[in-house]
Length: 163
Image (cartoon, rainbow, N blue to C red; front, side):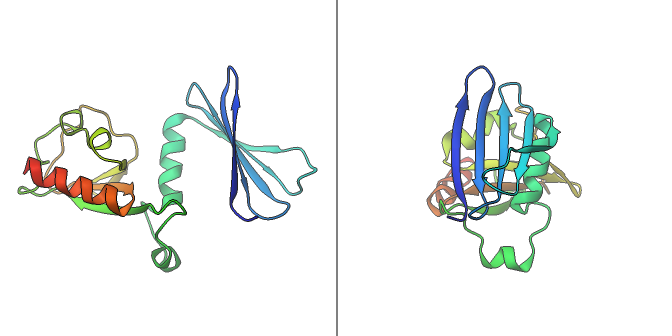
């Protein structure tokens, strides 16, 4: 039962996600309504979870970028780029011809117009995991986007329409 995930709503708190690593070990993440995350681990199913660490919403989003390979993708990760849901990460460069340059994120609204998720923005060698709606895309920016092949086609069509 590797990679089984269980989602539980915790009334008044948020949601808990349990990721079963193998028959015994599991990791749990509690996502609080406030955005805070708590990460827990247990070695055996019969054990109680031990809290490993807490993260603010911004810290969790940045940490998540490490996990999805936005900063560095090892060769093994490049060989298995798709998630079980068929999603994969693609990088999109903002060029003068792309139509994105000079537009604010809330004007383009990539996520609401396609089934992709904007994971981050690389600008001047720095990756930003939290992209405010008023960020103006600049030539040289690189967008880090996750989605299915169909979702990436939708994004490419959107980019073609605004160029």
